[in-house]
Structure formats: structure tokens, C-alpha cells
Length: 403
Image (cartoon, rainbow, N blue to C red; front, side, top):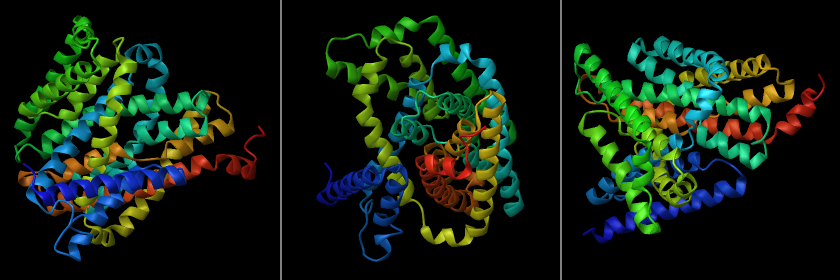
């Protein structure tokens, strides 16, 4: 049984998430930054520095929040897979390949600045990933809020996000193997990465050869049983990936793709969204709890260079990619501005860095990289959404409506 203190801590966390969601809705901003801020304020590096209490103070509450955060990652990647259409990918593969290849250039600013500051290829690779990936959740929400979802620029952004999502799934497989591999040598890491690819290949093969399995397993008239079956299968496959030493997030992504190809797609989105939102909120809160804001002071120059470099680089690669497909200046600018936003997947990379073990568990990887990711996401998610919200004013000021 949970003790009274643990229940109070969990209640305080959930109330804080509700307050943050309400404020985000009122100011028409993404709730991710506010969830992180709540975690910082109520965590050991916030009120924990002032009083002998904080959320996660009791061992029971701390373990529950860690488990909830892991479930948050699983549901975030599951929903990303759920919205992923293999048919659309095949239909638009040429276009997606072109814009996606151009988008890969956005690894460069993070890798170059990361290596310049730390002289470490792994740290540079981690910062490159954090900088590369735009936020599917925040961008999709902004498109709907602004009424852009049926525009050509929305198609451009979503096609880029599809490519980025595929890249980041492979990327997560690689870095999770490296960071959580107990300091294994390169041969062992190579074997583990190959094992991860085999696991994904087997899962994909099963999806194509036995698509009726996922259809039938969810085929029940009971809504309660439907939810239990769906969550149970997601948890089992993700847990099996962990047992094999692989990324549970990647497994959840492919389970999402499998479920997304069934007739139950709308029902899954309806019934499991609340779980995604709750545990996703706990994940972002946990990221804040694990972040010491005092570390921000030591990364100011790094943060400034990466924000300027990656922001401009992302804008121009997206802008000229859109122009390549004959969007006008206004549409291309919307694409460029929209892709600036960073969010959940940069934070997943931060979480993996914080949990690094063995020889890779250096202070730079377990503390500085996560602190950089949190501060970077806080700034870029707010900057991107604000720019999208004010595109009408920007277009008038820059006379973008005239060709």
C-alpha cells in the first residue's frame, strides 16, 4: 500500500499538471514547457532545496513517477506510430525522401557545436539528435489550433515529420543501446544494435504477414475489455523489448503502426488518449524533477549558439524545401517557422542521457546534456508556437502575400 505521504505527493503532481494544462490552454501555448517547469519547481532542485519535502521525496512516490514516465514514453511513441500510415508513406515516398534528406542537414548544427564545446563525439551525437527532431505533438496541435491542417504547407510539415520520426526511431535504437549497455565495447554495441534491427524486422514482418492478428485481438464489444487488451499488448511487447536490452519506445512505435492499420484506429485514439496525456504529462514532469536549473548557468553560450544556428538552419532547410515543391513565399515561410518547434522526442533523448550507465555515465552526459535539452526545448517550443500564432502579422509586415 502507498503511504499517506506518497499519495499526497502524487496528488500534488497531478494537480500541478492540471493547473499547467489550464494555463497553457488559456495562453494558447504548448503544455509541455509548463509541465517541465512544474517538475522543476516541485522537485528536489526546486522546493526540495528550500524544505525537507518535494514531489518524489518518498521512495514509493519516486518509483511510481519513474514508472509513469516510462509509460509516458511508451504511449507517446505508440500514438506516433498510430498516426503513421504505411500506405501514405508508400504513396508519397519520393516526395518524403526529398524533403527528409534535406532535413537531415539539421543534425549538423548540434553535432558541430556539441563537438566544439565538449570534444566528445557521443556528446555531439546526442546534442545533434536533440537539435534535429521537431515536435510532432506541438506542431500537429498548432496546425489544428490555427486551422492550417488542410493547407499545402501542413502537408509539407507532416511529410517532414514522418521522415524525422523514422530517423529518430533508428536513432533511439542506437543511442539506447550505447547509453544503457553497461559500458559495453564497440563489438557488443554493434551486436546489440543488430539485435534491435532484427527485432524491428521481425515485428514488421509479422505485421505484414499477420495483420489480422492485431485486428482480431481488439475485436470485442466490451469497451473495458478493448482497453485492457490494447494496453496489455502494448506493455507486453514493449516489456519484451526491454528484456532483450532494446528500446521499449521503438517497440511501442511499431505496435502503434500495427494497430493504426486496423479498423479500430478511431476507437484506440478515443479510449487511449487520456492514458497518453496522463502518462505523457508525468514524463515531462519527471524530466523537470531530474533537471537541476543551476546547471543552466554553465550552458548559456552553448544554448545561445545552438538556438541561433539550429533555428535559422531549420527555417531555411524547411523554407527552401517547400519552395522546391512550388509553395509560395507565405506557405514556405509557414513551413519554415512551424518546423522550428522542438518538444517530446528531444526530451526522450535527454531522459536516455540521464539514465546512462557504465563508462558513458559521465557528468556531461547525465547532467549537462539533459539540462541543455530541457532549456532548449523550453525556448524552442515557445518560440515556434508564438511565431506560428503571429504568422498573419509577420506576413503583412514582410509582404509575403505578394509574389
